[in-house]
Amino acid sequence: MNFKSLSFATALLFLTTIGWAQQDVQYTQFMHNKLAFNPAYAGSSGVPCMNVLHRSQWNGFEGAPVSQSIGFQMPLFKERVGFGISIVHDQLGPTNSWNASMIYSYHVDFGKSKLGIGVQGSMRNYRVNWDETEATHLGDGTIPTSPSGSKFLPNFGAGLYLHSPRYYVGLSVPHFLKSQLSLVDNQFELSDINREELHGFLMAGMVFDLNSNLKLKPAALVKYAKNSPLDFDLHASLIFFDKLWLGATYRGGGDLFNSAGESIDAVLQLQLSESIRLGLAYDFTLTKIRDYTSGSYEIMLDYCFHYQGKRLTNPRFF
Image (cartoon, rainbow, N blue to C red; front, side, top):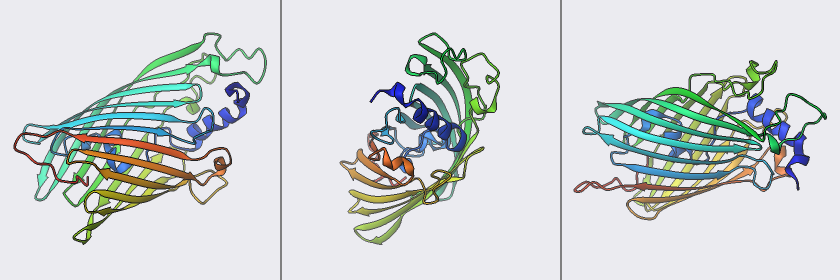
């Protein structure tokens, strides 16, 4: 099936993303990819950690979102300071975006809890491949004749992250500037429909001991963007023998004509060693897009380095 023949579907997908839903990348395994949402998380693990994640959304739907993220964070100066780097790649139809962030956080002790205060500076390269588009009207002069166009968009963000061995609560805004995404010189160049909107994220999670070999770990992520319905993910995992994590997520939102939500997701994670965690997730789509897709999937690898003479909390719940 040729992508150019799906101009209407691509336009619908684009408007869904820009006008009615989150512009930022979403992750089913958000509870283990917090650096992509909140700069205050950097350094909270107590040791250097790296996270790699791949997400394919709406598998089988040509031009659907495909995303990857790489995050590294570590504590410094007796765990008072955190440093991090986050790189996110997102492809949607003819658009391609790379976002790199440098992250700093400062952590304050409150008894058994710590409060992280984080800031980040980022640079985004946004590209549109015009040769993958097709005008609905011949001779439409608003589409450039060049094969592609791109621009660099600087931004900055901030967050708070309160955590202990048993819970966490975070609030963040990854980018404050409303950058203009338009790459064409016409009357729509300064339109709000082409702007990045401010996104706010509220996250929380806890862990409960059900018995000596079984734990319950609920988590939630609430997502806000202007001109979008309030979106949220509600998750719960059962942890067996501190090695096997079985969980499910309900993602709200969806489309304007479906109140059942966006998806129901299955999550499997394996603590392969003291340092390595492997995560898999599969989303069962609830919206009308389910007629054209077999669902969405994620794969994640989390690796934490050892300090000599220091042990990791096994497993690291947060």
